Amino acid sequence: MGVDHMDVEPIYTRIYEILERSIQDGRLAEGTVLLESPLAELFGSSRAPVRKALMQLQTAGLIRRFEGRGFMVGSEGAEIRRIDLQPEMLDLSAEQALLRKSFAWEGIYEDVERTIIYRSAFGRFRVNELELARHFNVGRTVARDVLTRLEAMGMVEKDERNRWVIVALDHRRLINLYEIREQLEPFAFGRSVRSINPAVLRCMRERLQARLASYPNVSAREMDDLEFDLHVRCLSACPNTELLDMLQRTRSVLTLGKHLLGVEIALPEYEPFMAEHIAVFDAALSGQVEDAVEMLRHHIRVSGPKMEQRLILFRGSFTPPPMSYIE
Image 1 (cartoon, rainbow, N blue to C red):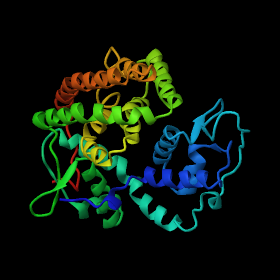
Image 2 (image 1 turned 45 degrees about the vertical axis):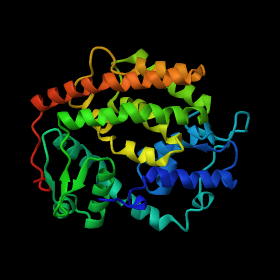
Image 3 (image 1 turned 180 degrees about the vertical axis):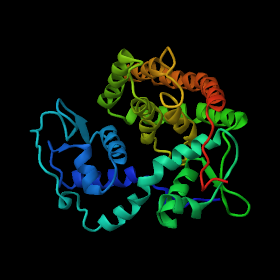
């Protein structure tokens, strides 16, 4: 079943586009400090999509980290401007209603995503859209928005009777997804990395190094953010959007890792991926892009068996609670 692009456009992409336009039009002047919480309040969203939009703006070289909190618009040397952002600075008046409607699904998304990805480890189940809406006391449009976004990531699909079903994350599918990632992610990284500001890559590497030094005192959210840096943020600069759409459907394995490691499964004695990510960034920063591509390919290849072992542990220790909207 085809999915209309506008229906599944990530909210952080819309936020990114609004901020990008405001910077390029000069409404957000050089030196303006951008913080997650005030922006989330302006957009009427949670902080998560704002955080992703800011990281994407950093990758594009439109904002940068500085000694204080948050990001600063423009290049190094600009005078820091800590001001209260106003809706007109983002030209939100024309889009506010649309944005707030778009964000309605956010309030329940994380809970539904976690429930769906956990259930996928145990097989194929039907998801009742009406019961989902009733369970969270939201309209069916909101429930459908959530399911459509999960569909874009390959976590649910429509069956032959047009009913929502969870796509089982079994042994065969896990192998298939990692095979796709092993072939496509390194290619996308090779296409994107030369256009990413080296300062952004260094920042990502520094975050990895800091978390590696403090491991295992690292939160599940921090672990997920580190994974997101290499496997999503870096690849987002790839000009081949068809390729990125294909990779989006493999995102369920990253989603599973987000909800397992440090949550349902204890962090392993030795860190699971940080040193491998650092090696990829080191090669890219030294101009050895081909080496970085092959290191990424190797990293994905050895990650598959690790994820399968986590799934086995999870299935043996977790009993999915009953949910009214899962049959």
